[in-house]
Length: 239
Image (cartoon, rainbow, N blue to C red; front, side, top):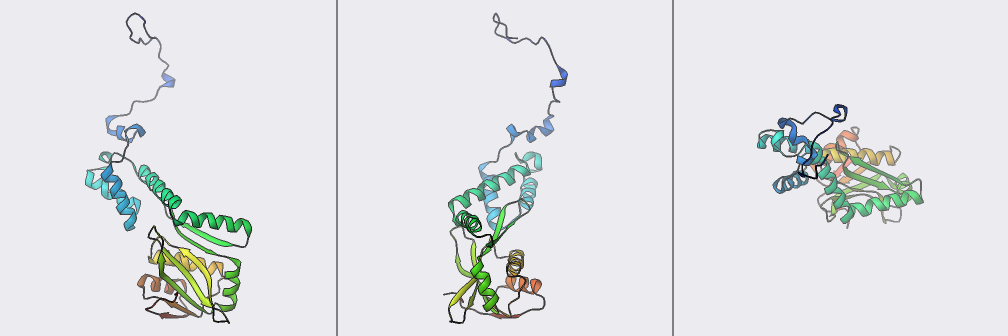
């Protein structure tokens, strides 16, 4: 009740059931109103994400340097939320967003259109692969020899663009599938080759032309342990 005479409030009744326990000083940093990432921390998040460091590892490192999580000023969920916002903005302004719109449009037009998206442990998009019906039919006829290359180009976000390419009976270049990768690690290549195999009904190429990439070679050996012939080349197979 507000006293008009004194301008002060006076408590006349307390309903305990409607109250909650007061947060202790040791846990006050967990309150949403008290959590905020500083500019140096935001910069570190960007550097860690661009370097491929996982959110969990980066958050733990920042906590150790701060002398404990209670001194960070934010919680791991804030870190992940910021990353989601960052990548969402990148997708809207970059090539990735255009790719996702294209994939959704193509699948609406053709239910046989194949695409797959890989997400990391924080449900953030990492790698994308797609192939239309013509690509899959071409592969069924001309997929004995496949050229796979990630050196063709990178998009403006710095993400490698990869293509599975072959040659038809008219000696014309044909595309069997395409991918937008988050990075060029063994894990990304393993996902990509497994996804490519799934799209192509598990048909293996007899010969694969690749560049001299150690992570790629390791992934190929793991995905196809009874290997087709892997041929390394130095110059690009896609002109």
